[in-house]
Length: 136
Length: 220
Image 1 (cartoon, rainbow over the protein chains, first blue to last red):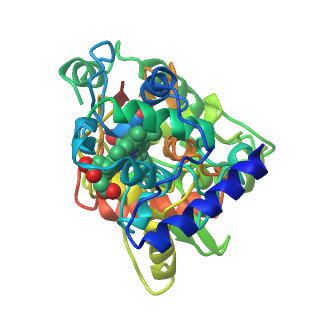
Image 2 (cartoon, rainbow over the protein chains, first blue to last red; image 1 turned 180 degrees about the horizontal axis):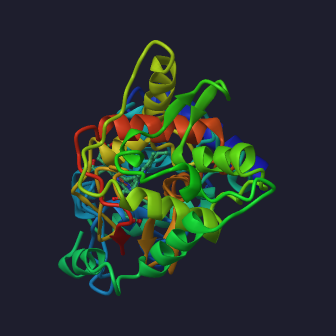
């Protein structure tokens, strides 16, 4: 499963570099994600962690972050750009404080339980992308 | 710090750190170890001491923090076993000692011997680490004051330690706080007492030089 995810990730990088821009146009799983699951992931403090830094349309979440743009700003991004920002924001901005959600490259002192693992799985990334597309 | 937390910190007799201060005072005066001596048999007071730590200790040939200094006295002067790091007794003693520097400015010295430790601490502060790949500086230098999931990010000044955290329901050392931030970014924490933590403490104290100590402080 994980090996499959890593393979499709490599494929996507190839796709995006040949396209020349900072986009990952193809789904990491080959399928569309589920926006409802994506919404729950974005709001989750244990899994997505997005609201640590971002705010967004989550009236039920009292505590949201102010280190990053409101998630409604995805309106100006294409699907491929959104996916690339979540997979590894360092591709667009090497100084970004946003974690790379689908990369294990160039990390230091990762804690035991998390070593060699990406923050989200390919399926979860697609769910989050599907949710963010509903904000456009 | 919110107004309620500040009021708790200022109320020394019923504040949450009061019990630890009482325990610390008792331990300070209690004879211990094969020497049969108490801290009070060798020392008058400890005013200003907490404001100077960590320091380079020539006998140990390493950088040590206040808790480690207390344990050196335990072992070498009192001939008693070292107190457990982060245990209740050591926290009580270091709160009692720290209390005596309340209101005094942080007075950290850097010299030829210690400069490499300061550089090491600064490098660690700026190093991105953990699965979330964040450095201390990204939160505490670049984004302090902003809200992380509703919590304002402080500047990471170490002036209140050991301090009482409502979340811990206990007093805890600066190293316990550092451990929390390591776990927060999903980085492998160090063992209590590790030289890497002491270097970070040294850098944080240097960064806060001139600020007034407020140990034992209270945090939410």
